[in-house]
Length: 95
Length: 254
Image (cartoon, rainbow over all chains, first blue to last red; front, side, top):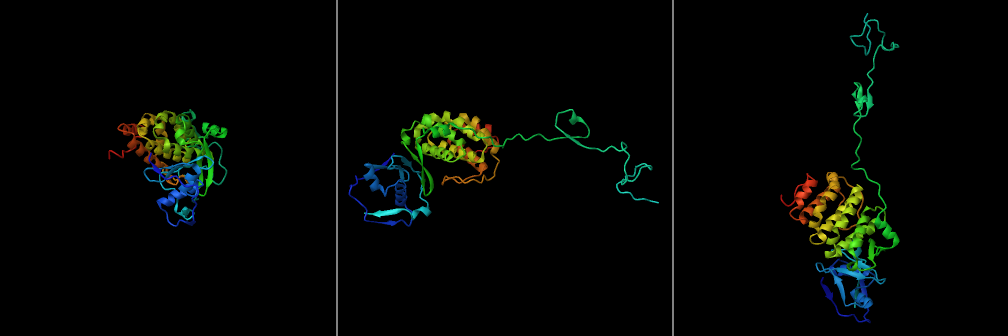
C-alpha cells in the first residue's frame, strides 16, 4: 500500500479565501472525499488528526480511508465517487 | 311438407319432436366431460378430461427468515453506523476494516444478503463491499463459511436479492488471488439456482444503490457472473460450470 507523505501542517495555517469547484478533477475528487468526512481538505485533516500521512489508492491516487471527528472510519472506492452534480458543492480553499 | 328444423340431424327418427319442445328424458345422452386428476380410476373413463399437472413453483419466492445478521445488528455487535449524506447513505466503520476478524464478521455480513428491508440490506451490501475491497489475503480462508449464506440468499428466489448476490459473487472472485479457484468445489451448491433463472431476461424494475452497477437483468447478470467464474476459476472452472449448467458456453475457449 503506497502512501503519500506530506509535511506536518502548521497549526496556525488557515485558508485565505474559498471558491466552489466548477469542473471535476482528481484534486476536486479528493476534496470531495475530505469534505464528506467533515474536513476542509488534507491540511485540516492532518491538523485535527495529528497524522503525517493519508492513505490513498495506489492505482488512482484517490483518498482511500479517513477517520472522522467521531473516530469512525470512512472507506472510499477506488474509482470516482463525486458525481458531476456534486462538483459545484465542493469547496476549494486557497491559502 | 318440409319443415326445417335447426340442429336436427339426418338420422333422427320420425317420431321425435322438434328441438324447441321438451325432449323426453333418458333418450339422448349428453356427453358431459368431467375434469379429474391424473393417475386415478376416474381418469380412465371415456368422457373424462385429465387436469394438467400443478405448478412446481420453481420461480415462486420463498418467505424470508430471520437472519443472524439482523440479530447481530440489533444487538449492536456490528462495528458499523449509518451516515446520511447528500448522495444518499454511507456506512461509517467504528473500527478499521484491516483489524476486523474476517472469520467471524464476513459470514455474518453474507447472511445479511437475505434481508430485504432497510437498513439491514443496505448495511449488508455495503459492508460486504467494503470488506472485500480491503480484505486482501484474509478473504481466502473464509470462503467455505460463505457458501451456505450465498446458497440461502439465492434459494429465496427473490429477484432483487438474486441480483445483489450475483454482483457480490462477481466482486468476490476478483477481490483476492485464488478466491476464484477456491470457489470451484462449491459450484454444485450455488449454481443450480442460476440454472433456473439463466433464461429469465426480465427487468426486475428495482433501482440498485450502487453507482457503478445499475444492471438489473437477471439473465445477463448470470451470464456475466458465470464468465467471471470461468476467468478466475482456473482450468477446471469451465467443466464444472458446464456440469451444473449445460447450456453455458465458454467465453475463453471460443
